Length: 338
Image 1 (cartoon, helix red, strand yellow):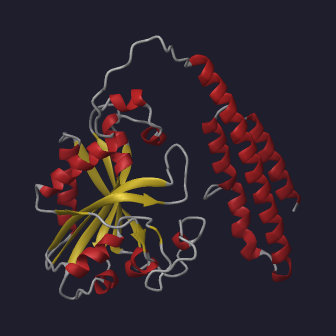
Image 2 (tube, rainbow, N blue to C red; image 1 turned 90 degrees about the vertical axis):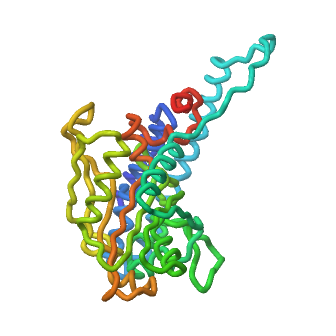
Image 3 (cartoon, rainbow, N blue to C red; image 1 turned 120 degrees about the vertical axis):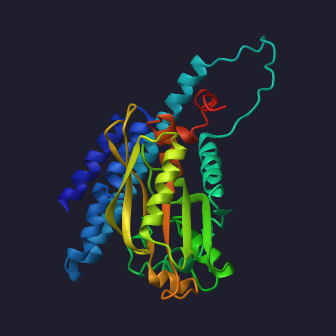
């Protein structure tokens, strides 16, 4: 228990010494993030004796409330300081003539999306999208994620309280994969489709955002193999980056909706990223259980699926090193892509 009190004291010190909003948010992730210090104590509840759990849980909850309270206090302080500096340095001269209207441009993520869709459309893939509010069934159960899957935790997923859709608790979708189920139930094989859109997870730092974009591919037919997946994805990567000097590798992994599964890494043979392997996608052959949930016969049909983050591909293509730049609305940053 003393360790928890020390954690609160240290959090207060770290929040009070943060010199910017970004450093404060990084401190928040350190204590309250998915793998934060306080989260580790929460996960340890299962190891506490039943008689002590209630008291232990009350103390953790009290510490969490106080940490959030301190966080909000120092966030407001930093915002006020930021506003004062902005008012001093960005004074408006009302005697200047009015500015002309400037032409707008596509956001870099939308540029990436359009580029990817054109590439896959050129090789016969349909383009579709789906709802951002999904059912628990489509988002998890139909994709072979059991009820005790960690992604269903309130710490990882945005659930919508007090509302039910077809007896399934709705949530902001955590990935674009639910469209595999929706699309396959209204279209017969062969199925070749690309789907994209916003997805939501409770995570925020320089490389993660609570809202981000994914693009996902699905190909189901009677004779689709892992080699087809490799050929399609390698072709896509080389066209997307406009370079033949890129290699890919499939690293064994686990996803409940594919079997076998792999992480896809790429390595550039030239340029500033030369020689560095970078993970850009998850992929695999569609799990037979998922095919059954698509109302397809797994003895007759086979296929593959892959999913990539649009932000990551955009950052690699344009050399951007901080994901948060996409959402700050900084005109000087966005002008580079018009």
